[in-house]
Image: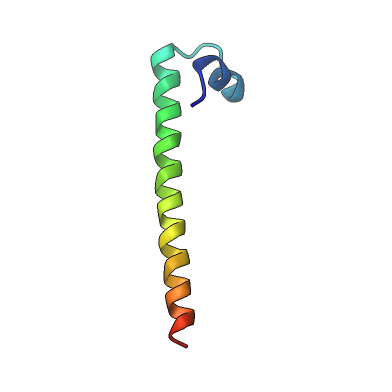
Length: 53
């Protein structure tokens, strides 16, 4: 996982507290997990749809 300093660099905002930085990081990680799970579901559905044709 990214450390707070790297996250601040990526966000270009040195004014964020450690807590805010970690909350942003965790929020993006959660969002990435949701997007990945949705992608997996869509991929599986496409494979199943193609198999039934």
